[in-house]
Amino acid sequence: MTRGWISRSSLMAMGLVLILGLVLVAGCSKNADVETEPVVPDAQPVEETPPPPVPEDKTEVEDVAMDYASIEPSEYGVMDVYFAFDQYDLDNEAMGTLSRNAKILKEAGVTVLISGHCDERGTVEYNLALGEKRARAVRDYLVSLGVPAGKLMVTSYGESKPFAYGSTEDAWAQNRRSHFERP
Amino acid sequence: MNHQRNLKNSLAAGLLLAVVTVAGTAVAQSRSSEVVIEHTSTAFIKTDVLMQELDVLSGGPESVAAADLMLTVISNDLNLSGLFQVGFSESNPESLQFEFTIEGTVEGPLRDAAQTGVNAPVTINLNLLSYPERQLLLNKRYRPLPSQMRVTAHHFANEVVFALTGEPGIALTRIVFSRGKGDRRDLYSVDYDGEGLLRLTANRTLNLCPAWSPDGSAIAFTSYRNGQQGLFSLDTGTGKVRSMIALEGLNLGADWHPDGEELAVSLSQSGNPEIYRITPQGKIIKRLTVSKAIEISPSWAPGGRDLVFTSDRTGTPQLYIIDSDGAGRRRVTFEGRYNDSAVWSPGGDQIVYASREGNYTQIVVMKSTGEDRRVLTDARWRNSEDPSWAPDGRHIVFASDRSGSFKLYVYDLVENTFRQLTFGQDPDITPAWSH
Image (cartoon, rainbow over all chains, first blue to last red; front, side):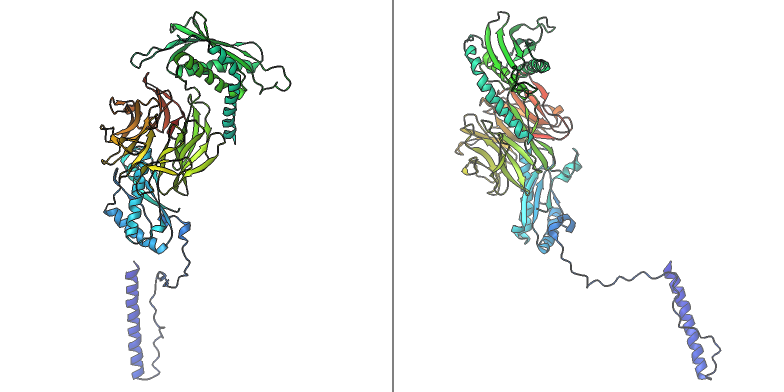
């Protein structure tokens, strides 16, 4: 709505300026006392609404160092990866997530704990072992992308620390994961 | 702390009973050696016992309460053993044919200035006689404090079972387990009959997979410190916990050797979980498995020479037997895609384990040779896991979420019956029955 308005106002303004210009030129070429035309102040575009504030360039933002060690990795973009039933290999989506995680982790330089989780099916002990395989698969992949191994701790909670409750495919899928947390 | 005091009381009760029953055993030895109950698993007939109310000879309400408690607990113990059927009156509606009877007396506290009051011991005399001949088979005399009443009743029930069958009773056994949600689960223990719940840890982390030492003086368990697993030992007398071993990775699924001098455990510090023998101080004695597979859940045979454990070297977890040198490995499960959590029976003849069938897990029992596989739980039991044998080789405790949340149940192999052991909201998992 404002665009049309401003254009018309601008047109009117331009029109006024032209007229003013013509009058002044006409006035100057004949005699100096032809000043009967009312002096129109320099036309400004009549804005009906104030223009939106132009964001200031923030390249000079104050450089407060992020205390990565005090917040959860998901809060600075380190996301979990998910696994198929009874599997611990990384699919393409997982590898994509881990590539992004690797960049962030290398930059942040902080130690994180990678935990492996399973859905409720199966036994407590075998799920602890499977969870560990998931966490180690993630750790090894991150190391291969250049994240220092010393910054990656690994643990497994098996089925004992679920993210979703219930015996549905959806809950199960949510629980088959590797999670990043503060150690 | 309360639980430490209670544990101490149990020990004190044991000492008290030891002193008092010396007098009793002299009479017991004169019993007839012909009184033995035979039973086979195919045609088990229970022995009927008449439990009579104890005579309260003196003392006030505390004596009456003691008499009632003895009746209730002893008769419950005899019923739960699966060997007896208890009646309370000669003219009973079930038409029981009593072969034995239990009777006794309760006397109030002695008129002694130092011993009067609510916490003074009462004197309880208990007799087991044949019926109707009334031949005296067993006489016991106890002087328990009020807090020792249940232990006293359990002790006598065990004496009855031993006198009549030659087998030790399970009335004084306990079950330790992990209770809680998420990564806040603590160890608790409960009497085999569901009473006497005690909390053993309160360390705000995940504690699970406990295992009793053969003499009951320690419980080994897995716990997490700073997100890392370790194996810890709880002293059941003092309640104190010490670190046993905490290598990188899993420190999981410990099982004590029958001689109590070492444990089998699964450690993944070498890269993937393997079975090791370690000392209670955490020193590795020997590594038993070498493979790229997951090897977990070891359980010693009662002879202490062989172990059964889980390996997924064929792609999915299956049970294998190996000897204590790591030699003679042979596979024993060939049915079902997923078999884990094996426990060798106290008699050495059977192995109980968990088998995943579709989305659910079920409890299976088989001969230790792998034959005669028998599924104990059906679909109604949803997920049934973490089995553990009672020392009588007849009962199994396991966890099932049939009620919506994992609770513990006890199964009687001969009767094919179940009873619920634990109640409440929070899930109970990984139980272990004391020896």
